[in-house]
Image 1 (spheres, rainbow, N blue to C red):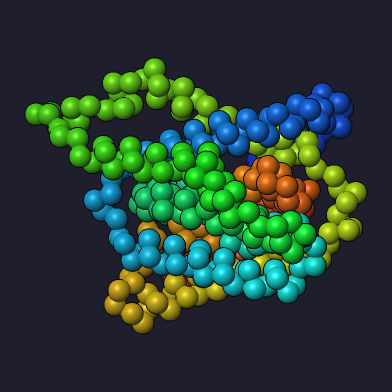
Image 2 (cartoon, rainbow, N blue to C red; image 1 turned 90 degrees about the vertical axis):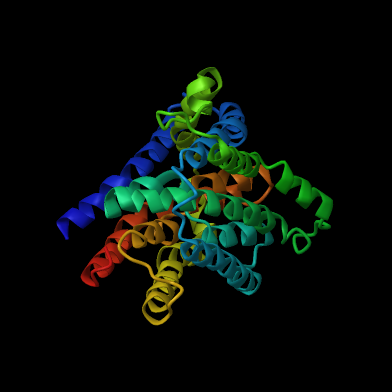
Length: 338
């Protein structure tokens, strides 16, 4: 139990520390609002796309994909999104908060902590499954996020612009990076190998002047995004948003993982198509049990939703996930699933 707690603590607390570093730097006036706004756009349009492209391109191969896992994960994300729409429509009063709460319900921080969390729980085999699922979760997460942040515009007194919504999806830097990553990965599968078993052409090996800058920029995504998030925090506003904050946090950390993991266990035990083992559950924990994505706050600000609530949700789901992940891992280990 101590090892489990230390793992969850060490996986999540560094995120919280960097967020509060951003808050401290703004407090001592080393950062100002103008810098934070520009940095926010830089993360959204440059750093995060580079990170997503690199993560997807780093997937070893499509050959060993267990499509039952992909079907379950993508279907669960879509079902959670649909159920979240119903909940937000009737349970959240502020229209600019509805999309933010919906995004928190269905979208986890898989891109940032999913890999390390899966590796810590499942070793190399767990990391392999998690890496394959990366390409199949990032795209629906980001496409559905665009819908989530725009679909309640009409209720907020803004006429829905479907052309703008489609344009937001097509031009979303995160979606473009994810699609390019899958295209490059698919292209790599078609490249023949030489007598030594190596690819005759490799993007990373033969075009390092392009590939290495992408890798370098991808490493800046997490720390800069978290510092910007911390700099935008305003704790004095928590009282005015306590209900959506509590409801969304409970949904992200308790309700969604409880339902998704229970369904996964039942399907694995009582159907022949789904057969999840110890290599799969680490990725499922990371996808459904991790805190809300850091980029959710960036997208909320870029798309004129309640970015303040979105930022608070990143902070509090990250802090409280230390406890929730510990409980999830403890339960699954007691069931011999981890």
